[in-house]
Length: 358
Image (cartoon, rainbow, N blue to C red; front, side):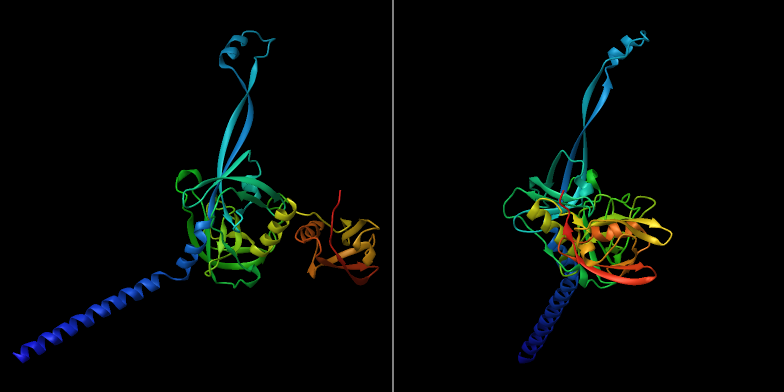
Protein backbone atom coordinates (compact mmCIF):
# COMPACT_ATOMS: atom_id res chain seq x y z
CA UNK A 1 0.00 0.00 0.00
CA UNK A 2 2.82 2.37 0.85
CA UNK A 3 4.53 1.48 -2.46
CA UNK A 4 1.46 2.60 -4.48
CA UNK A 5 1.21 5.84 -2.50
CA UNK A 6 4.90 6.50 -3.21
CA UNK A 7 4.43 5.93 -6.93
CA UNK A 8 1.38 8.21 -7.02
CA UNK A 9 3.34 10.88 -5.22
CA UNK A 10 6.17 10.65 -7.75
CA UNK A 11 3.73 10.84 -10.66
CA UNK A 12 2.09 13.92 -9.11
CA UNK A 13 5.46 15.63 -8.68
CA UNK A 14 6.43 14.81 -12.26
CA UNK A 15 3.14 16.20 -13.55
CA UNK A 16 3.59 19.34 -11.46
CA UNK A 17 7.11 19.74 -12.79
CA UNK A 18 5.93 19.40 -16.39
CA UNK A 19 3.17 21.94 -15.73
CA UNK A 20 5.58 24.42 -14.15
CA UNK A 21 8.01 23.98 -17.05
CA UNK A 22 5.20 24.52 -19.53
CA UNK A 23 4.15 27.71 -17.74
CA UNK A 24 7.77 28.89 -17.65
CA UNK A 25 8.13 28.26 -21.40
CA UNK A 26 4.92 30.17 -22.11
CA UNK A 27 6.16 33.06 -19.94
CA UNK A 28 9.45 33.07 -21.85
CA UNK A 29 7.63 33.12 -25.18
CA UNK A 30 5.35 35.94 -23.99
CA UNK A 31 8.39 37.91 -22.83
CA UNK A 32 10.08 37.42 -26.20
CA UNK A 33 6.92 38.53 -28.03
CA UNK A 34 6.60 41.63 -25.89
CA UNK A 35 9.93 43.00 -27.09
CA UNK A 36 11.18 46.58 -27.21
CA UNK A 37 9.45 47.29 -30.51
CA UNK A 38 6.06 46.14 -29.20
CA UNK A 39 6.47 48.24 -26.06
CA UNK A 40 7.45 51.25 -28.16
CA UNK A 41 4.34 50.84 -30.32
CA UNK A 42 2.16 50.64 -27.20
CA UNK A 43 3.63 53.91 -25.93
CA UNK A 44 3.44 55.92 -29.16
CA UNK A 45 0.41 54.62 -31.08
CA UNK A 46 -2.33 56.12 -28.84
CA UNK A 47 -1.10 59.65 -29.68
CA UNK A 48 -0.88 59.17 -33.46
CA UNK A 49 -3.75 60.86 -35.26
CA UNK A 50 -5.31 60.69 -38.70
CA UNK A 51 -5.40 64.21 -40.15
CA UNK A 52 -8.49 64.84 -42.30
CA UNK A 53 -8.15 67.73 -44.74
CA UNK A 54 -11.00 69.30 -46.70
CA UNK A 55 -10.07 71.65 -49.54
CA UNK A 56 -12.96 73.54 -51.17
CA UNK A 57 -12.04 74.21 -54.78
CA UNK A 58 -14.07 76.39 -57.12
CA UNK A 59 -14.55 75.70 -60.81
CA UNK A 60 -16.48 77.41 -63.56
CA UNK A 61 -18.94 75.09 -65.29
CA UNK A 62 -21.44 75.45 -68.13
CA UNK A 63 -25.05 74.43 -67.61
CA UNK A 64 -25.65 71.54 -70.09
CA UNK A 65 -29.06 72.92 -71.15
CA UNK A 66 -27.66 76.40 -71.78
CA UNK A 67 -24.71 74.95 -73.65
CA UNK A 68 -27.05 73.18 -76.10
CA UNK A 69 -29.15 76.32 -76.44
CA UNK A 70 -26.25 78.63 -77.25
CA UNK A 71 -24.42 76.16 -79.48
CA UNK A 72 -26.41 77.37 -82.50
CA UNK A 73 -25.51 81.01 -81.80
CA UNK A 74 -21.81 81.37 -82.53
CA UNK A 75 -21.79 85.01 -81.45
CA UNK A 76 -22.98 84.23 -77.94
CA UNK A 77 -21.00 82.58 -75.18
CA UNK A 78 -22.87 80.11 -72.97
CA UNK A 79 -23.62 81.20 -69.44
CA UNK A 80 -21.45 79.67 -66.72
CA UNK A 81 -21.70 79.31 -62.98
CA UNK A 82 -19.26 78.71 -60.16
CA UNK A 83 -19.44 75.32 -58.51
CA UNK A 84 -17.82 74.19 -55.28
CA UNK A 85 -15.87 70.96 -55.45
CA UNK A 86 -14.76 69.45 -52.11
CA UNK A 87 -11.43 67.63 -52.23
CA UNK A 88 -10.63 65.36 -49.31
CA UNK A 89 -7.21 64.11 -48.30
CA UNK A 90 -5.62 62.33 -45.36
CA UNK A 91 -2.30 62.55 -43.60
CA UNK A 92 -0.80 61.70 -40.24
CA UNK A 93 0.24 63.60 -37.14
CA UNK A 94 0.89 63.14 -33.43
CA UNK A 95 0.13 64.94 -30.19
CA UNK A 96 3.22 66.32 -28.45
CA UNK A 97 1.96 67.49 -25.05
CA UNK A 98 -0.90 67.38 -22.59
CA UNK A 99 -2.28 70.71 -23.91
CA UNK A 100 -3.21 68.97 -27.17
CA UNK A 101 -0.70 70.58 -29.51
CA UNK A 102 0.07 68.28 -32.41
CA UNK A 103 2.56 68.19 -35.26
CA UNK A 104 2.19 67.25 -38.91
CA UNK A 105 3.84 68.19 -42.20
CA UNK A 106 2.95 71.55 -43.68
CA UNK A 107 2.36 69.97 -47.09
CA UNK A 108 -0.41 67.84 -45.51
CA UNK A 109 -2.51 70.88 -44.52
CA UNK A 110 -1.29 73.72 -46.74
CA UNK A 111 -4.45 73.87 -48.89
CA UNK A 112 -6.91 73.01 -46.14
CA UNK A 113 -10.15 74.92 -45.62
CA UNK A 114 -11.12 72.61 -42.78
CA UNK A 115 -9.04 70.23 -40.65
CA UNK A 116 -10.03 67.59 -38.13
CA UNK A 117 -8.25 64.65 -36.56
CA UNK A 118 -9.20 61.16 -35.43
CA UNK A 119 -7.56 59.44 -32.49
CA UNK A 120 -6.91 55.69 -32.43
CA UNK A 121 -9.60 55.39 -29.74
CA UNK A 122 -12.13 56.61 -32.30
CA UNK A 123 -12.60 60.18 -31.07
CA UNK A 124 -13.06 62.76 -33.84
CA UNK A 125 -11.71 66.14 -32.75
CA UNK A 126 -11.81 69.60 -34.21
CA UNK A 127 -8.49 71.45 -34.29
CA UNK A 128 -7.24 75.01 -34.42
CA UNK A 129 -4.49 75.89 -36.89
CA UNK A 130 -1.74 77.48 -34.77
CA UNK A 131 0.94 78.14 -37.37
CA UNK A 132 3.38 76.63 -39.82
CA UNK A 133 6.85 76.88 -41.25
CA UNK A 134 6.70 76.19 -44.97
CA UNK A 135 10.47 75.93 -45.31
CA UNK A 136 10.78 73.34 -42.55
CA UNK A 137 7.61 71.62 -43.83
CA UNK A 138 6.10 71.57 -40.33
CA UNK A 139 2.70 72.68 -39.05
CA UNK A 140 1.29 72.91 -35.54
CA UNK A 141 -2.39 72.30 -34.72
CA UNK A 142 -4.22 72.23 -31.40
CA UNK A 143 -6.81 69.53 -30.76
CA UNK A 144 -9.98 70.34 -28.83
CA UNK A 145 -10.40 67.51 -26.34
CA UNK A 146 -9.68 66.26 -22.84
CA UNK A 147 -7.35 63.59 -21.46
CA UNK A 148 -5.41 63.46 -24.71
CA UNK A 149 -2.52 61.02 -25.04
CA UNK A 150 0.83 62.44 -26.11
CA UNK A 151 4.27 61.21 -27.10
CA UNK A 152 7.67 61.67 -25.53
CA UNK A 153 10.07 63.56 -27.80
CA UNK A 154 13.55 62.06 -28.03
CA UNK A 155 17.02 63.35 -28.90
CA UNK A 156 17.70 62.95 -32.63
CA UNK A 157 21.37 63.81 -32.10
CA UNK A 158 21.70 60.57 -30.13
CA UNK A 159 20.69 58.26 -33.00
CA UNK A 160 22.84 55.24 -33.83
CA UNK A 161 23.26 53.99 -37.38
CA UNK A 162 21.57 50.60 -37.50
CA UNK A 163 19.30 51.00 -34.47
CA UNK A 164 15.63 50.03 -34.78
CA UNK A 165 13.15 52.60 -36.03
CA UNK A 166 9.34 52.38 -36.03
CA UNK A 167 7.34 54.49 -38.51
CA UNK A 168 3.70 55.27 -37.69
CA UNK A 169 1.05 56.64 -40.01
CA UNK A 170 -1.94 56.08 -42.27
CA UNK A 171 -0.45 54.91 -45.56
CA UNK A 172 -3.74 53.65 -47.02
CA UNK A 173 -5.40 57.04 -46.75
CA UNK A 174 -9.11 56.96 -47.45
CA UNK A 175 -9.09 53.28 -48.48
CA UNK A 176 -9.10 51.94 -44.92
CA UNK A 177 -11.68 53.25 -42.46
CA UNK A 178 -9.81 52.44 -39.31
CA UNK A 179 -8.31 55.05 -36.95
CA UNK A 180 -5.58 52.66 -35.80
CA UNK A 181 -2.19 53.70 -37.24
CA UNK A 182 -0.14 51.19 -39.15
CA UNK A 183 3.42 50.39 -38.10
CA UNK A 184 6.50 49.55 -40.14
CA UNK A 185 9.92 48.68 -38.75
CA UNK A 186 13.40 49.32 -40.07
CA UNK A 187 16.69 50.83 -39.00
CA UNK A 188 18.45 54.17 -39.13
CA UNK A 189 20.18 54.03 -42.50
CA UNK A 190 21.94 57.38 -42.18
CA UNK A 191 21.77 60.68 -40.30
CA UNK A 192 22.43 64.30 -41.26
CA UNK A 193 21.43 63.67 -44.87
CA UNK A 194 21.65 66.86 -46.94
CA UNK A 195 19.00 66.44 -49.62
CA UNK A 196 19.32 68.28 -52.93
CA UNK A 197 17.69 71.69 -52.97
CA UNK A 198 15.66 70.57 -56.01
CA UNK A 199 13.59 68.32 -53.71
CA UNK A 200 10.60 70.40 -52.66
CA UNK A 201 11.23 72.77 -55.59
CA UNK A 202 13.84 74.62 -53.58
CA UNK A 203 11.22 75.85 -51.11
CA UNK A 204 11.81 73.27 -48.38
CA UNK A 205 14.65 72.91 -45.93
CA UNK A 206 15.32 69.18 -46.23
CA UNK A 207 18.71 69.14 -44.56
CA UNK A 208 20.17 67.06 -41.70
CA UNK A 209 17.45 64.49 -42.42
CA UNK A 210 17.14 61.01 -40.91
CA UNK A 211 17.21 58.27 -43.53
CA UNK A 212 15.44 55.00 -42.69
CA UNK A 213 14.47 51.81 -44.49
CA UNK A 214 11.27 51.53 -42.45
CA UNK A 215 8.48 51.57 -45.03
CA UNK A 216 7.11 55.10 -45.47
CA UNK A 217 4.33 55.53 -48.00
CA UNK A 218 1.98 58.33 -49.08
CA UNK A 219 -0.30 58.98 -46.11
CA UNK A 220 2.53 58.45 -43.62
CA UNK A 221 3.51 62.11 -44.04
CA UNK A 222 3.45 63.89 -40.70
CA UNK A 223 3.50 60.70 -38.65
CA UNK A 224 6.13 59.99 -35.99
CA UNK A 225 9.34 58.02 -36.37
CA UNK A 226 10.15 56.43 -33.00
CA UNK A 227 13.05 54.54 -31.47
CA UNK A 228 12.82 51.31 -29.49
CA UNK A 229 12.46 53.30 -26.25
CA UNK A 230 9.13 54.72 -27.42
CA UNK A 231 10.56 58.20 -28.02
CA UNK A 232 9.73 60.17 -31.18
CA UNK A 233 12.95 61.09 -32.97
CA UNK A 234 11.57 62.34 -36.28
CA UNK A 235 8.60 63.30 -38.47
CA UNK A 236 8.07 61.08 -41.53
CA UNK A 237 8.17 63.45 -44.49
CA UNK A 238 8.96 61.97 -47.91
CA UNK A 239 10.40 59.04 -49.84
CA UNK A 240 12.56 58.58 -52.91
CA UNK A 241 10.66 56.27 -55.23
CA UNK A 242 10.03 55.91 -58.95
CA UNK A 243 6.87 53.87 -58.38
CA UNK A 244 5.36 56.02 -55.61
CA UNK A 245 5.68 53.19 -53.08
CA UNK A 246 8.29 52.59 -50.43
CA UNK A 247 11.62 51.21 -51.63
CA UNK A 248 13.49 51.64 -48.38
CA UNK A 249 14.50 55.28 -48.89
CA UNK A 250 12.43 57.20 -46.37
CA UNK A 251 13.35 60.53 -44.82
CA UNK A 252 12.26 62.16 -41.57
CA UNK A 253 12.77 65.61 -40.07
CA UNK A 254 14.89 65.17 -36.91
CA UNK A 255 13.09 65.69 -33.61
CA UNK A 256 15.53 68.32 -32.31
CA UNK A 257 14.61 70.57 -35.23
CA UNK A 258 10.93 69.75 -34.76
CA UNK A 259 11.09 70.79 -31.11
CA UNK A 260 12.67 74.15 -31.89
CA UNK A 261 10.31 74.95 -34.76
CA UNK A 262 7.15 73.94 -32.86
CA UNK A 263 8.28 75.86 -29.78
CA UNK A 264 8.59 79.06 -31.86
CA UNK A 265 5.23 78.50 -33.53
CA UNK A 266 3.45 77.85 -30.22
CA UNK A 267 5.02 80.93 -28.60
CA UNK A 268 4.78 83.34 -31.54
CA UNK A 269 2.19 81.82 -33.88
CA UNK A 270 4.84 81.62 -36.60
CA UNK A 271 8.44 80.75 -37.30
CA UNK A 272 10.76 83.72 -36.76
CA UNK A 273 12.54 84.64 -39.99
CA UNK A 274 16.31 84.58 -39.63
CA UNK A 275 18.25 87.47 -41.15
CA UNK A 276 21.96 87.24 -42.02
CA UNK A 277 21.97 90.80 -43.39
CA UNK A 278 23.63 90.07 -46.73
CA UNK A 279 23.00 88.49 -50.12
CA UNK A 280 25.25 86.49 -52.40
CA UNK A 281 25.53 85.92 -56.13
CA UNK A 282 27.43 83.32 -58.13
CA UNK A 283 30.65 84.53 -59.76
CA UNK A 284 33.64 82.73 -61.29
CA UNK A 285 35.27 82.84 -57.87
CA UNK A 286 32.25 81.28 -56.15
CA UNK A 287 29.37 82.57 -53.97
CA UNK A 288 30.19 86.26 -53.57
CA UNK A 289 28.68 88.87 -51.27
CA UNK A 290 27.13 91.52 -53.53
CA UNK A 291 24.90 93.31 -51.01
CA UNK A 292 25.26 93.78 -47.25
CA UNK A 293 23.43 95.99 -44.78
CA UNK A 294 25.72 98.20 -42.73
CA UNK A 295 23.45 97.75 -39.70
CA UNK A 296 23.64 93.95 -39.88
CA UNK A 297 25.58 91.73 -37.42
CA UNK A 298 27.55 90.29 -40.35
CA UNK A 299 28.80 93.75 -41.34
CA UNK A 300 29.68 94.63 -37.77
CA UNK A 301 31.64 91.37 -37.56
CA UNK A 302 33.72 92.37 -40.61
CA UNK A 303 32.04 90.79 -43.65
CA UNK A 304 32.21 93.02 -46.74
CA UNK A 305 30.88 93.25 -50.27
CA UNK A 306 33.06 91.24 -52.63
CA UNK A 307 34.00 88.56 -50.08
CA UNK A 308 33.87 85.05 -51.57
CA UNK A 309 32.24 82.65 -49.13
CA UNK A 310 34.00 79.27 -49.00
CA UNK A 311 32.40 77.81 -45.83
CA UNK A 312 29.46 78.45 -43.53
CA UNK A 313 29.34 76.93 -40.06
CA UNK A 314 32.38 74.81 -41.01
CA UNK A 315 30.56 73.33 -44.02
CA UNK A 316 32.02 73.99 -47.49
CA UNK A 317 29.67 75.86 -49.84
CA UNK A 318 29.70 76.03 -53.62
CA UNK A 319 26.33 77.59 -54.45
CA UNK A 320 24.26 80.46 -53.00
CA UNK A 321 21.36 78.06 -52.39
CA UNK A 322 23.49 76.17 -49.87
CA UNK A 323 23.97 79.42 -47.97
CA UNK A 324 20.24 80.15 -48.03
CA UNK A 325 19.51 76.65 -46.77
CA UNK A 326 22.03 76.99 -43.97
CA UNK A 327 20.43 80.20 -42.71
CA UNK A 328 16.94 78.72 -43.07
CA UNK A 329 18.05 75.97 -40.74
CA UNK A 330 19.24 78.36 -38.06
CA UNK A 331 17.23 80.14 -35.38
CA UNK A 332 17.20 83.66 -33.98
CA UNK A 333 19.96 83.83 -31.38
CA UNK A 334 22.13 81.17 -33.02
CA UNK A 335 25.71 82.07 -33.91
CA UNK A 336 26.94 81.80 -37.50
CA UNK A 337 30.52 81.53 -38.67
CA UNK A 338 31.51 82.46 -42.22
CA UNK A 339 34.84 81.72 -43.85
CA UNK A 340 35.66 83.93 -46.82
CA UNK A 341 38.37 84.56 -49.34
CA UNK A 342 39.35 88.24 -49.61
CA UNK A 343 42.19 89.17 -51.98
CA UNK A 344 43.62 85.63 -51.75
CA UNK A 345 43.51 85.75 -47.96
CA UNK A 346 41.21 83.54 -45.89
CA UNK A 347 39.28 85.18 -43.09
CA UNK A 348 36.61 84.03 -40.64
CA UNK A 349 33.79 86.06 -39.12
CA UNK A 350 31.33 85.09 -36.39
CA UNK A 351 28.06 86.89 -35.71
CA UNK A 352 24.61 86.28 -34.13
CA UNK A 353 21.48 85.61 -36.18
CA UNK A 354 18.77 88.22 -35.83
CA UNK A 355 15.09 88.27 -36.75
CA UNK A 356 14.08 89.80 -40.05
CA UNK A 357 11.71 92.64 -39.18
CA UNK A 358 9.60 93.91 -42.06
